[in-house]
Image 1 (cartoon, rainbow, N blue to C red):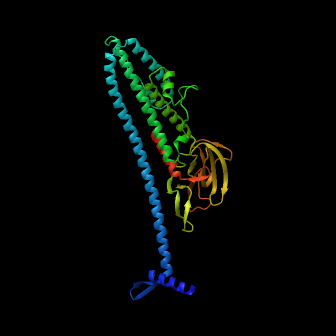
Image 2 (image 1 turned 45 degrees about the vertical axis):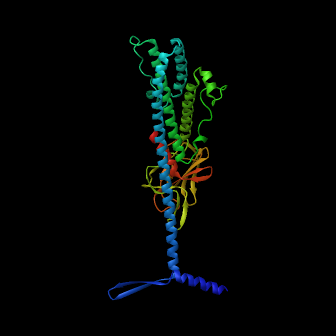
Image 3 (image 1 turned 135 degrees about the vertical axis):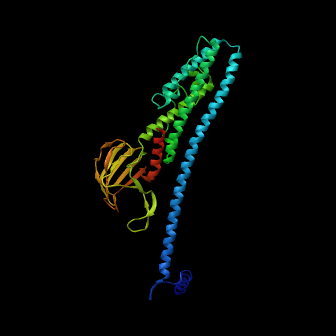
Length: 383
């Protein structure tokens, strides 16, 4: 029975891959090569593997392009939403002027409302200290000429400027926070895990998610308190994400060109498909290599296949590995800063030429370094 099965398989292979001959004629000299079924099967399997690898690589590249496009669309939608809110605000202000002008309430009551809002705005504006560009965006409008305007007109103008300031504060905080959230998403990270869990306003006796309580503490109307809360929440997220990003490996280890990315590739030594757990950069011998985030050097030495290696622990479960170095400029246990030189590019270990093999690990699992570098590029654009 086994002989019959063997013959059946041979017959099937013969039908699919019959022996073929390749002839090459040079004058009167004719040479022939026999393409046996075995050789044809080997070539077919190689073509399938190559096609599969190309398909996987193309799919990964397309997915990254889609993610980048979605990220750009998110920022565009945020800007469009901010512009729409500003337009709605202007329309509300115009109607508010008419209502306040015809209101039977005294000017003293309106003045007190403006004063309370001013006190709340002062607290909010204090949160923006140190935020690049915030001071210019949140500068109050010039005061009206007291000799040419009635007290009511001046109070209304101040209130309009307060509305403009809180709208600008919301827009500045929201835009900057969203760009940071986008950077974390590009790196495959959940921004909520790195953002603030509470708000800077209210104090220990106030529930941060209750605008009514916040309105009572600030002594302003609930709608104004809600807008202060939104600006404060986004600003807190921005500060927390910015602080967290300073400790994550978002920067590039070298400016050298990329030669091989993360994922499945053909091994340069045996030609077989293999998983490449990092990203390679090629450059001249002794090209400087820099730390991609602050941290503590956890290993300096030789690892099998990697050659000379430097590993840095960045905390939060993140670790980076720099392999095939020609020399190391740090020691185990040493604290390093962002951008500090840690070694020089080489070709030690299992290497076919001078290059850096760079890996990013999160909670014991290798990650795609390209995602983190795209996140770093996003942060650089924001700066």
